[in-house]
Length: 620
Image (tube, rainbow, N blue to C red; front, side, top):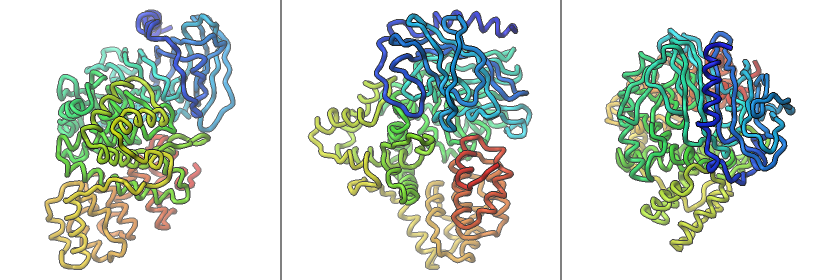
């Protein structure tokens, strides 16, 4: 046993007693929903607190250690955990070794890990290590980082990937607190979705405490050569040294965002709101890990034009982290509410017109997504049935933008004041709990619609395909001016040079590019690029939408082919890269897509790889 392990063992013993929930907090056992994406049987035996004692081995690219749970049961004889692509070495109940059973391996769910317990059992410990198939982890070599000096590790647990780096009851309804002891190389810093250090330790040992109960998918870890810079006493940013000043500038409005959010729907419940900007392979725009949002470097535009993403992840501190979807079939309860809240934060800070531009782009995304699902109309329901499928398949514009449109339509029906009062009470009353669609509808009917004698077609929105006819109309005056310019440019009364001189913000430019007519000539398209220099855009969002149009229009001038390839080689954000690979496929350029993807694939996180593999029919 190393010195670290001895110290950790002492801390483990202390924390199982003093850091776990009290007996009062542990009882009574809840009535949990059936979650087809977890093997756990929480109505029989459930974990309520985790003590994680692990070491990160960059040489072997694994995490190894022990997960010790404080449990409660209803006279159960066993407790069941989720595990996928893990090596389970030993299990103990109240400190005594017991046998364990691993179930059949399911390609999506992994395996059940069943451990016998007694009626009086209080703790279960699992000694394990990850493998090279662990999907949540991405180990990066120095060349894949900004500073290119040290390796990096990031985790991504949503939706059901936490079970690939921690054996756990991996259902979003199973909230737990945690303490973690993490050992990393001393030149690196470890940070988690918990109370975090602001400086590196001298010996690479870190202790984390998450006092509020969170869902398993929100347990997150990042390890790298990171530094911290404060924005306000409760907000700040982590990044690699070469990025920290840019990140600090970009996210300077974080405290203002927290204040705006609190003014809308009540006190921020997580004490600290920090953001870490990760290497470009991170598969999402952001991930709302409590106290520590993970963010993509693609939002560092230099002009704060893409920071609605931070407002979105902050909004998750209420919708998602505070009140959480009970199962992944109820995912819209996380994302639809969060987009609505995001738009309200952006409106409070930057005005209604700005928020409407963002919402209009989302409305376009929704129309495109519904068209994509024309052969699967059930996939456009808000309440999903994902049994037998990867829940990641439900993480699309339906949950986000149809969910938002439902809530915006509801707001316009009942009035904003009533809507705000309802949502504030909803978050307050259900804080630190989980919600099913059916439970929410019951609450909505009782506390908003019936109370105010309002008729609303809730079931049409939630359980039927497409968009109901009463959907709110989102109008942006600035976008209408863009559309007028498109018409004038198309008809020849406005040339490309004058068009590019217009004082448009980023959202207007994106709206313009996305709506370039399909039938526009290649000469006109080339003149536009020559005037606006879109092929060399440094704003990643503009680059993505322009590159998609370049592929759609079979455009190859201005070195755009090399720019597209470089973009796909250096950006790992799934939305961005999948948009371009999809464009290649749609335009009968599958061979080119596979050529680039074969080179870029090692740079992507497994979340992105799984999506693109399936899209392109790629086999390694």
